[in-house]
Amino acid sequence: MLLIRVLLIVMWELMFASCMNQDKHYNNFRNNEETMKSSIITKVDTNLLSNQLDSIRVSCLFLGKSSKSIVFIFGGDGFKWLNNHKDNNVHYINSIEDRNKFVNYINLFYIDCTEEIVLEKKKRHYIVSTDYPDVVTEGYKDGKKIIYNRTQIGEEEYDVEYNPKFLEFYKFLDCLVVE
Image (cartoon, rainbow, N blue to C red; front, side, top):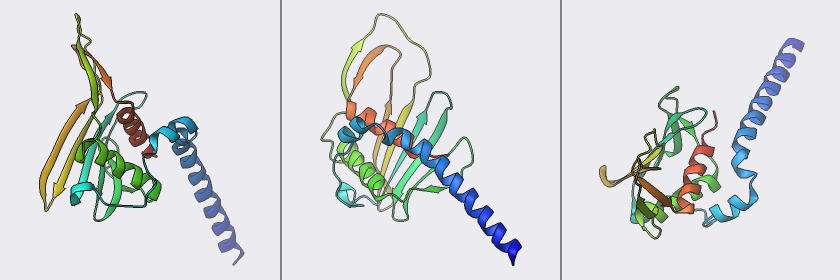
């Protein structure tokens, strides 16, 4: 009986330590109060996409210290993500606030289109060749793809000014990935 209690305590401590480590990474984005204020579009508890879409799929390529290809899926069975380069395990996002923020950004840029993603594009006299991150968004209704949008963040021949809200959306997506 004592052995079982000790094992339960050790397991509880490991789970607690694991949760604390995840919170540390997850809170990197949340700790910046000014960014949070400008990022929150609305706090209404809703899981509805405009146009009554069945699901939305957002594929992101994040580049940096650790490159990753993440797919976010929002639909009838919840809000989840998976890392194509690492484990292909499904990770569910249970936060109502995160779910609402995601839906609001999707409605803003891809469904209602009340905000532009690219504000200005100027041709350069030189080329910058590198890998650029991108966001591919697909919306489905009754099993048919009715929305497709690919946004590459950066271009070889152009200086591009992106909507600050779109860049916040991209950072928000990156912060949702807690590995």
